[in-house]
Amino acid sequence: MSTVLPEGLRDWLGAHAPALNDGSANDEALLPALASAGLFAIGVPESFGGAGGRTGDAVDAIAAVAEHSLAAAFVFWGHRAFIEYLLASPNAALRERRLPALLDGTQAGATGLSNAMKFLCGIESLQIEAVREGEGWRLDGKLPWVTNLRKSGFVCAAAVSSRDGEPPFIVALDHDRPGVRRSADLDLIAMRGSNTAALSIDDVRIDAADVIAGDARDWLPRVRPAFLALQCGMSIGLARAALSAAQARCSSARATLQDALDAVGDGLARQVVALHDGLAAGRFVADPVALFRLRIALADTVQRAVQLELQASGGRAYLVDPQFGFARRLQESAFVPVITPSVTQLEGELLKRAQQTARAA
Image (cartoon, rainbow, N blue to C red; front, side):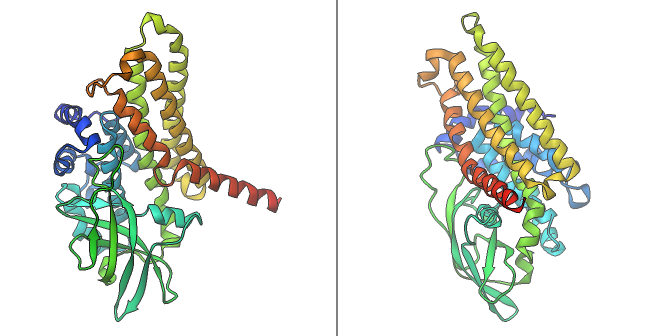
């Protein structure tokens, strides 16, 4: 289960991966590069202008990009997650209006729903509030961490609570809507070419045409499997890259690592199969715990793979050599456990559910 990237894109990602990580790249060029390879259309029905296939195919595509650059895969994930929201939206007019520019990469899509996924698990409250105003709403709040807020323009999904007793709902916010303000890029230690920033929402007016889903509590559990599975593609690709590098550098002097390499590789393969099977069968909607466990397991696989690359590389891994790639992958691997929902948050949710089950027994 893998996607073969066009040679031109592989070369481009290989050449730009260090700069995408340290922020010295032209981050405006990334989205068109991914779009020109047709990646955003993967898993999108042909009737909506896509290439067909399933969400699992999009997971494979993100994994393929992550083998070359996690920053590029992070942007891909955020953009493709927004596309998934439109595919799951009952607002057909919004989908028809937005999808073409998202599929061809002329507009950036940002998920903005990390806060909402934590809200769904009871970890935190929604950070944007709506007040009814005629046929629409007035919004105020902030999203402290959103990826793919492209400086030349973006549309961002956000979850909104209602001060008027309505259910929380999901909206699409344009970069140029009055009251929407993007901060400077966050000062990340890596992945700096991902256009990650905070978003302030001050007295922003919207109406029904901007609503992706009218009831977040009903809609979020149905899109959460895609949100997390697409995110897992990042871990899969990074783990594969580290294992491949470790295998290539595993000289006869380090042959003792081979059993560990085989074990981690076999475990990764099983995790990928479980992810695809669960997505295809639709099991993760009713059983999110299984997906939480897979996300945690894949994060652990990434850490083990990167450590094996370090051991296989020896002292060379500690030299400054951007083309060698280890230092970048080490930085990238540090990001995997903290992507929302973080491994700690997921483990807390598993513990809470276990305690609830024990009390009910």
